[in-house]
Image (cartoon, rainbow, N blue to C red; front, side, top):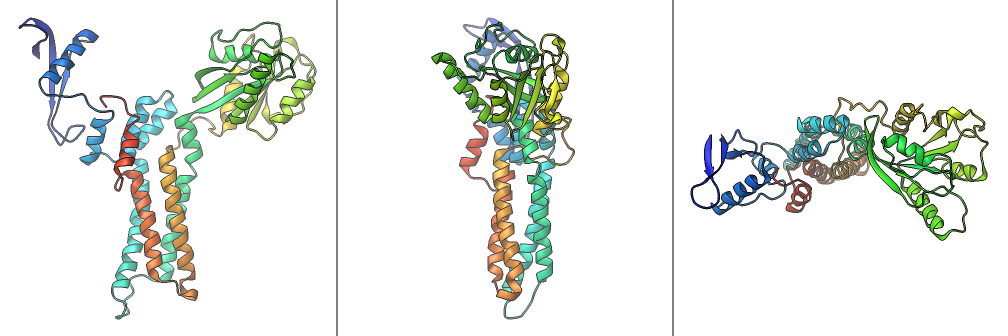
Length: 406
């Protein structure tokens, strides 16, 4: 424990604990000292000022994690997982980030890259001895190796839709005719009286949003104006915004009043959302059912926004319709990042070209140099995922989203 004098003279301002982490065993791989003071913002600010006066500077966003990458402590996928873990708001997000931090995705990509390297190395060795007639790999082995790599890349890409849903969440929009109970259902889902509820149709004029967790999935829930023809200019704008929100939604909850027959406005909303990822929430179950079913029974959930009946079933159905299932993260490596997806797609395209060339090599005499070039491009794309080959622009993009001090 150290006594630290801050401010004028030698007056005691705080007692702090200084912990030293010698490299290369530290987080960054360098010698690191951590100063722990009391939590007063005034004292901590004075402590930072004193450190800067003595020659230190404030860290850039993500600088500590960037240094850990540069010193080989972790790769770029693991570094991005650090930021994802910090920002996680659901158990599924935290688990997916932790799996990547543990290196599961990096290992899977590394295996594909290693297999491609073996094929490329054998082809290049054969090219080094063209006159002697040495061949270090048969055409069948080349085709088999490329087919295996393509299957592995496809398996990773097949997890991307679910991975992005877990990492980024979904936009879910409540839509329906006026007075169907959208705002009451919105309040029931967010467990707060966020939306104004009245018996007058057209109360909601603008989009109302709230972040919440639905059955383990991070969701931005949007309440919208009732969709109908109106002469009110403000309500017309609200309806236009509602339709735009529905068009961009990952899932739509179409709310209908189950205590009355369908109206023309109900039918218009139902027709406009056919083919979309949707759930039909038949509201006001506490008032008896008088509405006819014109939708698939699989889409229907009967609820009561007033009593709360059916709300849990509605949440589970929305998540299932979005494709997340039970909300569990699979044990296999999960691709969650748009950057990773783009790199994997480039790698896949290069392997597919090489496979096509290898298939035609016997008949059309495609030079082996073409295969080597395509395989090399695939390897470089895979290495860009993990950061084995990354430009300064890629590093700047990745670490720009980090918080200060991490």
